[in-house]
Amino acid sequence: MKLPRQLSYTRSLSPGKAVFFYRTPESDFEPLQIERQKIRGQKSGFAEAYKNEATPKELAPQDLAFGNPHTIELCYVPPTVQQLYCRFSLRVEANSLEPNVCGEPKVSYWLTRFMNTYKQHGGFGELAKRYAKNILMCEWLWRNKTSPNVDLEIIGEGFDPISISKANRLRWDGKWREAEEALHILTEVIQTGLEDPYSFCFLEITAKLDTYFGQEIYPSQSFSENDDVARTYAYTQVAGKDAACFHSQKVGAAIQMIDDWYDEDANKRLRIHEYGADYKNVIARRAPNNRLDFYSLLRKVALYVKEMEQNGLKNQEQAFHIHYIAAVLIKGGLFQRTKE
Image (tube, rainbow, N blue to C red; front, side, top):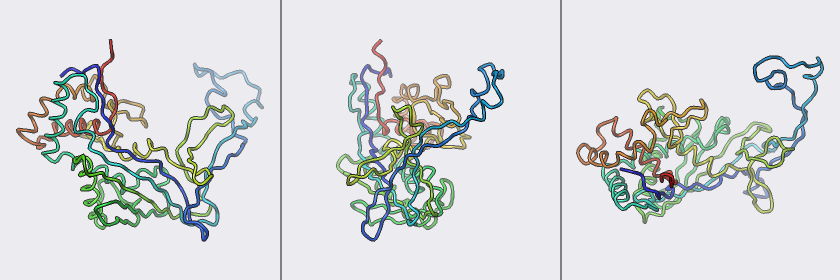
């Protein structure tokens, strides 16, 4: 199957911003503030004392002892606050069942047939379970997950509120036990949202973090156009105040950290990406030369349809590729080839 000049999918998982707040006797929603400080940093980088070829620069002894003043933004829990909250909403839609735009009817036919066959064999259940695990494990809190204790609450239509204590202690391959029912319920809810165009699945997820005195919090970092500020944090306006938050993209990245299909011996999960970007190790795990990238596998969609029709998802190697293709389509994006 050849990629058309126009092919796009609308994302199926749409999280909102995750906003940090705390409660006081006067208010149930007091935004967590970001503060700006000017500090005297240190000249400790490689380029301060070495040239590109790793030869030392000609410097006076005091040159590396001078300070390096710069401005940064910081975020701390107020000293009188012992519990901090972080909340976001998640909309789950069945947008992956067919392309949003496709310039070739034959491609549209095979992609639609692929996802419908995938649905018939329960493929969405596997992906939904993985998304649910990341939500319940509080992966979306990123560095803030290492708080002393995190309790989680999820509300939505069609199910009783989900509550989990010590959610940050859960592990991907660990024993879930008390959280097993919560995982089952949330998996079903997300699966229905991915499969049923009329389910209108909305979730509201709130984490309650027990904090230490004046604990530092790490919201999303933002790119600053102001050269005078070395680091800026993301915020959103709440009742005229700036509330620290995570960008929706950062929340979505944590939820979609499910790709361990790139290698049978994979020891880490990657965010769904067309080339298997491993940002920590600065390498593409699905580079085109190993034929595991999304575009190489997408060309075999018709073969995967026939594989599912004959064997379902029993063949593990083929199932890994099929799950990955479906996950990328759920992520959404532009997949067409260049105009040239």
